[in-house]
Length: 240
Image (cartoon, rainbow, N blue to C red; front, side, top):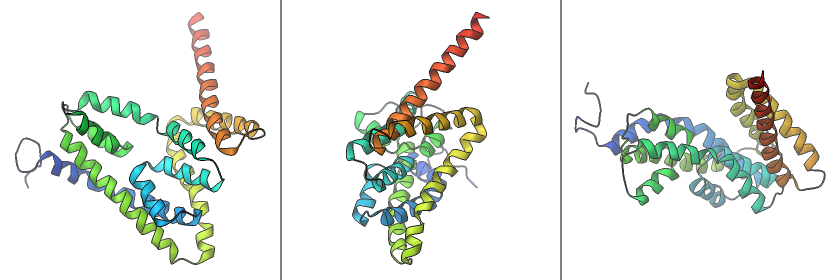
């Protein structure tokens, strides 16, 4: 069996990226299916659901957007909230920029759009300079899987009984819990503190503002307050 590398000339960087992206595409299937199904039960049309996956292409943000849509939040609230959730992509893009080969701004913009957490993780394992074609190839598979199975999930939901469609809203909260568990295992104390702070601030803020703004502001304030306590704690330790 011939090992596929950049140097053996048997497979281009793009094809190698597509090959390495297949596991990501498979992993996206159940999440995209669930998103499409819940999007339908939330009231979105198939065109709106697929267009969201095509334009946004960010799982956690899309699920948050669905939750906020269900709560009747405004467009500006949803956009700002998802921007905060996706802020980490700026850091990932900066990291990949340092590791990737030199290329045009158009090429960089292309693979930056497809730079999900999983694509970033796979590309980061490669020794620099990482080929632009490799990143794009990996992103193509991830993107195609996400968009395709969003549509499949939506149509799958239309054949389910109405009571099952309604009950799928529970899957939204189950997914957020599933996303939270790995973080708790890794940094349990920090995650729990941030969750408590966020919940407490949201409870207060929603008394005098809409739910969407309350969620967004509570997230920001919780992080700021936590970082301030961390900074004060470090200064006290250094003072001793």
